[in-house]
Length: 340
Picture (cartoon, rainbow, N blue to C red):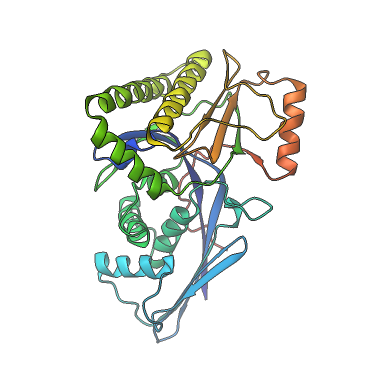
């Protein structure tokens, strides 16, 4: 029996919420937090056999081609893989096991690192024979994940997990990824906000507002696009990172998100857990911004000495409670076939 082991990182949308759902809309994404893993077992047995299984905190799924169509992500990936490649399994027993448990807190709550997208990438990788081009994996995983979500999904999380690092994502039927250099001088945390938000509902409210707002929507979104472009420029520049400029733009994007959230009726103000009187912005020291739609997830970025001892102590308490995790950027995307 031959075995293989692959991993992919989680994904976060740093800027560009709602914009990335449009054709040509841009956002800035970052791989980080943790990695999901894939284990494959292949045996030349003279007969065809396939098992696809996934595991996460408090749950699991299992599917085989002998079963009828199902709502599992594994089935959606298998169906799209067959559609795009037409490949038949010949004389092999193949077992594909995906584990996304690291994308959950100790209490079993999702941390917002795109667990299902990472799983789609790994399921796809497990079906291919030998390391395929990343473009093939991205295309298959993207369509499968969209189908599983009912035809929705920008795909930023798929491309972030496949490529790793930071990048500008451009939305559309065939989205694009342009790599950027993420500075390594900041301390960052993902902190649990006030409430969970259903992204489809938020996007629907956004589109209704945009249709009704007309020219005003172009003004509001134009400011957000300008800030994203400036943030990308900072991350593309060589030499020493512009620490103050990065935090200022992140704060400007936070304010844009707050304003847009108020307009569409989906609050996006970073509200920290009770007892944590942290400002949204301290010039040259720290900035906080909600990620994605709503106020469920907060990014806190600070220079090494940007937080007081009391603030660091409180963050430590949040970590112990499962309400905060350190965000460590993942430079590598899909790491293929580390043999076991």
